[in-house]
Length: 79
Image 1: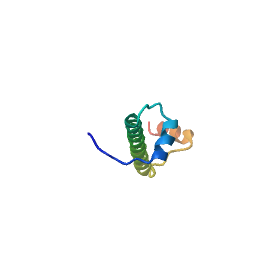
Image 2: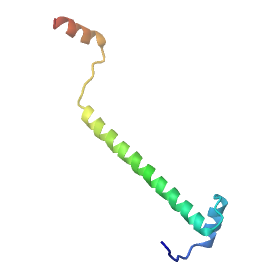
Image 3: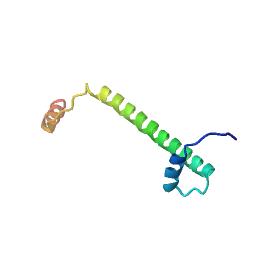
Image 4: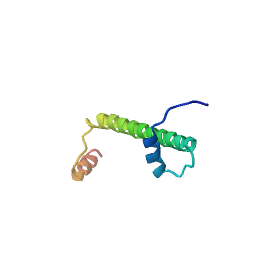
């Protein structure tokens, strides 16, 4: 897609320090690719955090026995 935009020359000069791009177009494409990758990673981490929170909410009511002897005793007595 062809477009005309007014870019900040100071930002372009700063970005060129960190890039191997040879022209403005390549620099802008690299920046867009990096932005997309960063946002995709943020979304992936956010959905992971949401799933973890839901799992914690489900398991908060589950009480685990801390003493294995009580579990073995209960199993023995049930026979």
